[in-house]
Image (cartoon, rainbow, N blue to C red; front, top):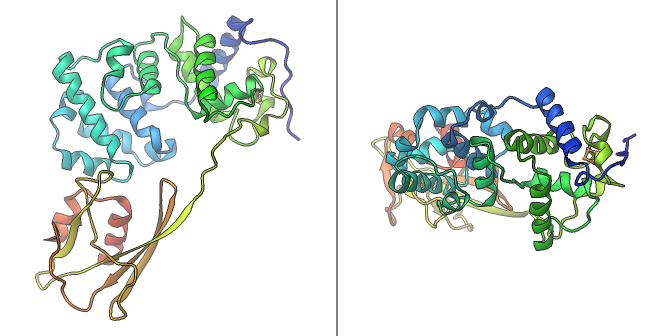
Length: 340
Ligand code: SF4
């Protein structure tokens, strides 16, 4: 049975005690991530951008952060990098727009700030792709300056602590979360405090049923039915879609690839797409599934009866060349499967 919090004190009125309890717990139980060992704003920025839409276990467990930092160890190196190589290193993380924005921010830091990150909220907000959350993360994690941060974890914790049913994805809910995060922020230890608040949401005050029994701030928490919080307005509906592509190898052993269309994956390559009503003389080769935003995609690969004529931008590549081209992970995976 879940133990409910035992509310005794308003954290705003007893803020030093609230901060001490949270920070003491974090110092003992906080996880050790590579970006928590550094004060380098560039490393903090890279980690925050990666973690925006990719789970921590993927960024860390699959070595994306370490690989990126080895290949692009400094902001100047990233600013100078070839976009195709950047996208290749980003491959598997998805949402490639993030990689381009990161490079655009790096270029602006080099051009406008001589390669030195400004310690100023307004100047950081002016960088491409940086919003309030990322700026707060840079200010507090890299510079230990007092700036609040609000992400999904922090919103959940705050809505429970204050037993607030305002939907966290509504304008008043978002505004209120930022206001509370600013009020509670430890001005003397912003780096530790913000890390602790996020970690509380990851480890203890989790999605679904929180572990109130182990919570270091249970005596400050008003939640009556924490498992029912936070409230959200919008429900995410998943749409099933099908995608048909061709796998063609010519007489020279080269494979046919097409440049991605649209802005989301611009600069990447893919297996050429065909209409869904696949002709009966196409031979089915393989199928896999992947998810992107609110879509669950069934990817089917066919071999056409002959070698098709090239359409806009399509090219033949040797296998080694194809390996070095940036390509979204679902195509890379199925391509390797077909070659093996
Ligand atoms: S785990 Fe969450 S809901 Fe439970 S006492 Fe702590 S802050 Fe409140």
